[in-house]
Amino acid sequence: MKILDLTTDSLLLPVRSAEIEVVHCQSGRAVMHSGCPKTPPRSAFPRLMLELLRARRYDWIIVPPSHIGWTTGNGFFRRLIKRSLRWFQGHPAVARHIRRLVFGGSARFVVTDYSDQLHPSEFALTCIEPVHYFQLNVPRVLVGKRLGPANTLIHYLPTVIQDDLIDSLHAGRTGAAEHDVFVAGTYHNDQRLKQLDATRLLTARGWKVFELGEKSFGKFTAGLLASTLCMSGRGLAYHCFRPLEAAAAGAAPVSHEPEEGTYHEYVHGENCFLYAPYLSPAEIADFVESILKDPILVPKVVEGARALLNQKHRASVLAENILNTIRTPTNQTYA
Image 1 (cartoon, rainbow, N blue to C red):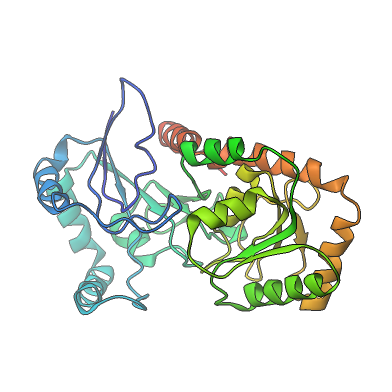
Image 2: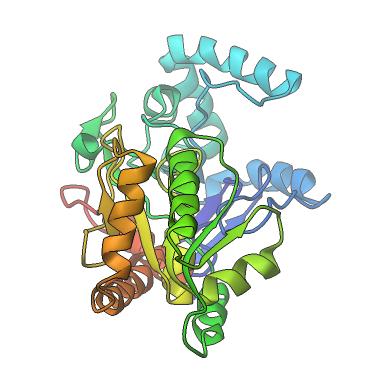
């Protein structure tokens, strides 16, 4: 099986199989595997052109979603491209003809959508017509459903971090926690601001809080490895790396249910401590304090969070899961 991956972050590169050939042509800044975004090398564009010239040799094509209606943060050139793509969305027969001209009639498509958008891309469903659509922030009601003219099967796409980062964080916790609560990041939304306010209330009550207000991954990991609980409010959308990094480092994630009904696998008391998203900072502080006063709860959640991490969110495991889904007839679902 030959797979051409045209995404910014290849989720299939960790696959190790003599039967599978994965060629990745990075199409933008890589952001999925934690840490800082990684710009494509200078050779990325020439290689992309070369692989498109021989695209007919591939059985599967992995593509990004192209949310053409979302232009926030896009430069002039990218906005211009998205405006031109709107014409193709209104003329799907033309898009279908060009797709077959470039990729041949036998190639099948998969979309991996790890953007912060909370709905599938209408352009992808209409013009790319993928067999499978994997979405990070997929609405719960759409998981396992079929959408678009090609009856595309919708799947939840777990956040992923690299195996070596998971293993290094796991090995880094060597002693008892020095801090009760860890909080860090950019406080750009209501949930994160409420968590920050809650931790400051906890500090006033005498609990030991590690608050990181600078971008230092070394200090971030050191603080996380020395904390009992980790505040993991939503990032740009509900799913982010923080609960996974906490699980790998042996800190129990503290988060909230998504306000918009996004699919997730967190279960309160099993792999995460979850509270209602409408709680005030004082109520969140009370919630966290009740956990800290009953420390027998924490080890079970840490163990459950780590199990979920290893079962669904390791780069190698996710690659195999996606590959197995591609191999499976589409009357079965992946979640």
